[in-house]
Amino acid sequence: MEYTELGSTGLKVSRIALGAWQFTETWGVKDYALVKEIVAKALEVGINFVDTAMIYGRGMSEQLLGRALKEVEGGEEVVVATKIPGDFLSPEDVLRAIDRSLNRLQREKVDLLLIHWPPAWHNFPTCAYMRALERAVALGAVSYLGLSDYPVELAEAARSCLAREEIQALQVRFNLAERWAEVDHVPYAERHGMTLMAWSPLGKGALTGKYGLEDIGKFQDVRINEPLFHPANYTQVLELVKVLRDVGSKYGKTPAQVALNWLISYSDVVLPIVGARSPQQVEENAGALEWRLSYEDWRLIDEASKRLKITYITW
Image (cartoon, rainbow, N blue to C red):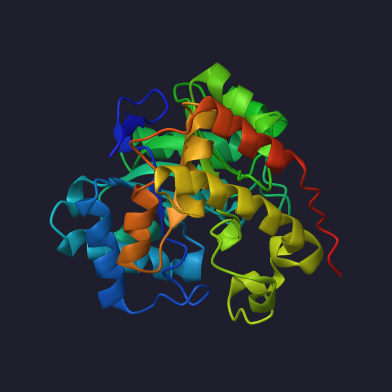
């Protein structure tokens, strides 16, 4: 396993994080025995960084993850990131939300707390909730702060509200089919010493090569409405997958492993968050590390990726 520093915290974290959104009805991994197997396999292969959120299953993911980390050997040492939704950012609600999260996770402190999205529906003032989060750090309930799904302009506004803490991580969508993060977010993270946590690094499975056009109408989970699986988009994605498969054959790697390695090679601040619905998927994800694409192969994939023209107008 490869490791890196989380922002400027000094925390040593694995170069990929185990995503825990799948531990909900949304993705269907609700059986605790399976959750425990997935978490145990992650620790076995050296993954020590897990990402969840308060809103995943209305706390279900945190609860299942917290129980597993209590029962799996070494679980107490895992770095846990969770996310507080914008709806919970009233200054009076921030500590209440953290208390409930800690209870579900069975932890005394959240290692990394990210705001899940800006509170656009409720118009909570930015500095009011950022100071409330900074108070949570001062009180010892949270170690470090981050932002998820924030445009750079608003991230900078949020940073300016902090007196003593820094934003240690930005979490954004970033994969070979959806690359807008490289325009603003990656340079911003590099400039300020932040970790860029790439969510959906495999496009909810679109880049794995596991599905043909005939499969995309059969999904019974969140992918039903995923734009990447719309035929107009997925036809293009499959062309990219062909390139990933051809390159992977040179290294003995799967399309998913190649896609993740490409992201990791993009910048030393990029850290993919990869979900897994089985221990075998955890092992496959870990196989994206401890090797590197050649410059020529990285460029070949880069050019193939740039040919995609993804539209989000699917209805």
